[in-house]
Length: 328
Image (cartoon, rainbow, N blue to C red; front, side, top):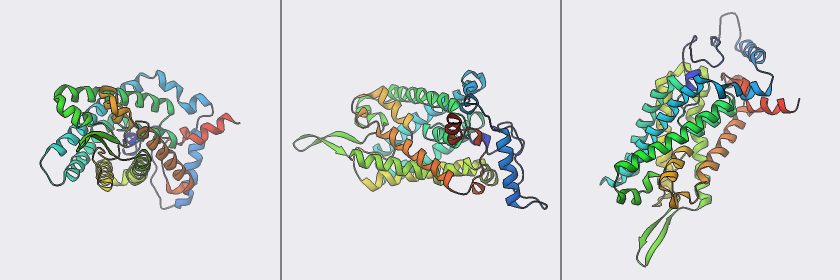
């Protein structure tokens, strides 16, 4: 989730650094910050690849190291789906006056722990939203992103299968296997009725919550200097807290039964839909299109602000660089 945090959040000689170069101090007694920024930009330009194949990172499609790293994404996403869907079900099954609050707190803790577990191996994405955003910004290549997203989708399906194996059919049907839903069919006074939210409302919630998620928390992981200053544990804990808050806000602001809050993770939504099927496919596209729009909006934001205020490793895979290589 936290972008290629492993490539950003370690010390100056981190073996996980994408560029393989040492992160220089933010300032020195003899150089002004503006000069340091210019030197950093020059270094990036010199190290940037020039061919489309290099920009896309096509060599990583055949890299055993990348595929092995993707196993962390697969296992991490499987555990995430199993844990989060279990939390959703248990929160509403528990006799409490504030199930949304309980659910959000547990989700925050779970996400932070899983990010810390997967971060040293793959960077700790476990979410196509984060992987795609990292690819657009240029922190990872689109080839690595494709491998990660594939692993995340497979992991989500395995997590949903594991959940299906341990819950009874009544809970599976009542809670749609903890999947992402806009509406569900519920018993009414005059027969079954559809309850939930509209497609347009669900799409807006996905876009807004996903963008806020990227902007308010993942931004710290993408900015390697800020991440280094705050520390890995604090940054990943903040990511978990923001996820929990957004789930709580989106689920509470609608107050609609049948809608458990913004998904903000297309793979998690896909896993339950593949295993459970049925009405989980109704409006399923919302949980992919919304985060995609949010990623593009976040990327444009990073391009519009002054570059000296966003210090990120890996600009060599930046989407604009790829587009420019197509039109030399």
